[in-house]
Length: 493
Image 1 (tube, helix red, strand yellow):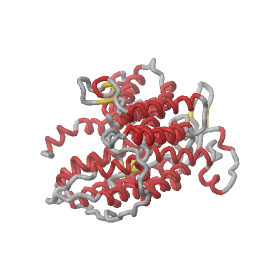
Image 2 (cartoon, rainbow, N blue to C red; image 1 turned 45 degrees about the vertical axis):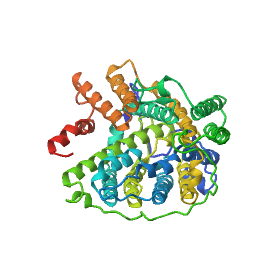
Image 3 (cartoon, helix red, strand yellow; image 1 turned 180 degrees about the vertical axis):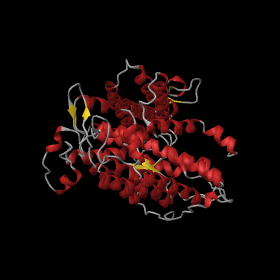
Image 4 (cartoon, rainbow, N blue to C red; image 1 turned 90 degrees about the vertical axis):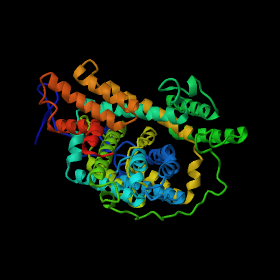
């Protein structure tokens, strides 16, 4: 058996295929459900998992409202998708993929329509294709990622990334999640005299941002007092306050930045499955679509974003949940990666665009989730949203955003594992951390970290140290950063 060296004169067995690198592994299961999800083995409880699953849903429920808005534009023929159809498709795809992630993958990761994928489809693809052709591209990119998983390449790439960069990815995602929270809440603003400012023109304004601040402080106080379910309690309390303030102050949807927190007159709505199966798999490659070269570039872009965004999120959330071993590897990772890849195809088939692991999964982990039972709960609530979609609008984005900032603060703890005095490690880690929030792109942060790591190693005469996979990744990411001139050279617009 292969043994790995840890300290001079000592060896250590490589990590076994277990589900939790903690001392709680030996805990005896209480029943069949506990045994299946390994709840006790991972040091969790049924209460933690249910609460964590609900917390994750509340943090990402906005996708049921936002994704239909993003995909509301007209395609090349002028056709627009119906709002009810899109709402059903979004909830359906999220429910199916998240339940699969829980039951098969057994990890606390929620999956839903990726905003980067939906945005790219809406802005770059659909103006030149029909909606069915665009969804066909989603199916193709999802199947390509599945092939990468089945071949074992995706897991090898994840395990081949140096441990300091994995910690940096976790930190970067934490900063990325925090800036998303601050921005969505209106606490951080763009469009003023500076790239970013405190609210519009350097000052906070409006009831919604005040409710965000109160919710944020409430959660922080509860966490400091070690109150179980602090995040879920904070979200619930913030929502109640938002409902009261919205009614008393007579606020509008515009004041809340889109959807005002009102209790719906009728919480029940009938699902509309009209988009399911409307897929033209290869139409975008033909003369009436993007064309072969442009469609291939579009698929490459979607694969790259889906591949590395999800990879980084899984590393970050998995590390935060304590599911990674000392080398930063997650046992059973291939199942989670397979389901994430399949989410692209499932999303395209349902009409919701490609699905990906959501960074909001970290909110459930922060509230105690450690197993797939939490994801099953989250997916189950998404399934309920097929019939109760008006209820999803009750939690305002400002309240959910407070949970994102809290989780960002928690993920910063990974900084203690990086040797900041070693510049060969510190510089790539720094670039990974800061470029995720600064560019609003997880992939850009991972790319900068990988490229700088290999270049610095080569520059110091250690070009063999990164290994072949890191050099292959470097080449891929150089193409990623140079995509615009490459498309210009190919004549792709």
